Amino acid sequence: MDGEGGLAISNAVTVSAAADFARLEASVSALAKEHRRLRRENVSLRESLEARTRRMRELEAEIRDLNQRRQDVAKRLDELIHRVEQLDAQLEAGAARAGAKR
Image 1: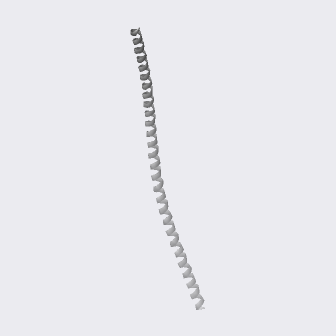
Image 2: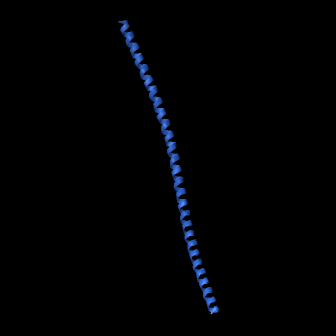
Image 3: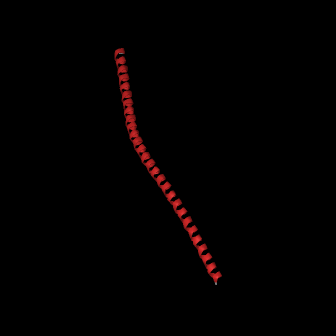
């Protein structure tokens, strides 16, 4: 019986070890699959980040350009207002001279 009992225990250990190995193999396989999925997701996220960074830089450049154009327009308007004021002053001076001659 000891021989048979020992064999039964040995078979039980072998079956248990095989089951442990199968669980380990399944776990490793699942981890490898998850790792591949995460790597793909990482690549996708990096590409998305790169695209958004490029877009952000484009928009920042556009903002700088529009701000410069706004400043140029404000400067031009100031110049036009100054010129109109000068013309008004000239017209008033001319009208005053014309009134004084009479």
